[in-house]
Length: 157
Length: 409
Image (cartoon, rainbow over all chains, first blue to last red; front, side, top):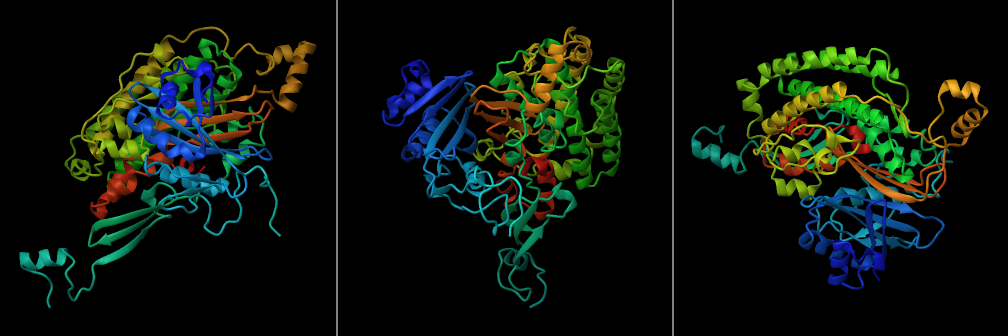
């Protein structure tokens, strides 16, 4: 359900009109619009936003670890439309046990590396990603450093 | 079978027809220690003769885990980390981070500090473009340009040293304003430089713009379409060289850029030469901005009026108990930032630099993500070089102006 105070934002209203189940929440804070989407809907929502709402660019994909809360991860997408100049943040909550979400590489090719980075540093798997392997860390690295339960310092024994 | 001599034989050989020279496909490893990959970038090139069939990039050699490091530093301490990400444009990084945190805090920055930030960020752009031009020209074989560019870059670094005490890792922008009061005599120093610099740009252009070798190596090379670039996450001068007028300084102005008068140069060809022209014009525009900032520099305070966030003046700290307490609190505990999240995009010399900062209400960032332009831009490399000649790879990737520290973080 789209919060009532967000109906005045054309993009939010359009997404709700496109698929009433696609928005589970959102906020307008510090002049930035955030919409929450269930992980199952992410590809269709992104496709709608790109082809229908002119969000031609995917600026970045990242994640936030809310450990020990559950669902543990927030996968965050920053979208950018050039004409009119507009930014939108999409958020999906993903469970901590074997986190999985569908890849948006079929919508924007740029998601390829962004998602590989999230996979590398958070261990979130992206289904249907063409080339899901580590990108920044060595292939034989153990663990995912940006998780909150990964230590800042220490030596492996 | 002898070496191909007739046109038919050559054509057959080019098609990859089996000959005594064997299959013509080979894999070439370029980098990570290769001078023209500007840092530790590794390209794995699949070659058919001299044509590139497939290109794969391998990055991460410079990964330092800076985003993790942010989570254990207080907000103000973390400014020093941002310098080290894009080490050719440290002040742009400072600016992006400070703006993001200031947005979270809802902090108003006085005009003098905003203008000073604009001036120094534009000098940083000059600094970065000079390194790009020098090394790019050096890759293509023009050594003189490199020496000239580093001569001027030295002047800029000395200006930074005058302001902050540091040549490269300045950390001069702090949350709430500037780190130090602008030094006495800064105006003369900047003026001396900015008066001479346009003639220096002419000098570089004399060497390159109509140079037949330069044109031969750059025109029509490294072409990539605008649609591909938008889809692959490429930003900045690359897009502008393909005819798209996009610049965060104009589209979503920050730090009072809306008060400055400058043009966003574009070209239509989207080749290496067009990117060269765009960046040269950008340097001239940056000079314009620096001059406007210098001439119209507002007077007044250079840091915000918020005793919870900004360190008190030294004088007050020594004489007033309250100021001393705030000073102690900020230095030992930092300051709390209200819960929330922001994404602040700025135009770095390389493209869209975004800071996504999440606060949980404590004195340390919960999560900082840097959307760095080099990381996005590099995704366009395979599309740009596949189908071209091996010799053009160096020119093509040089025109991208990436920094590996910025890519790997």
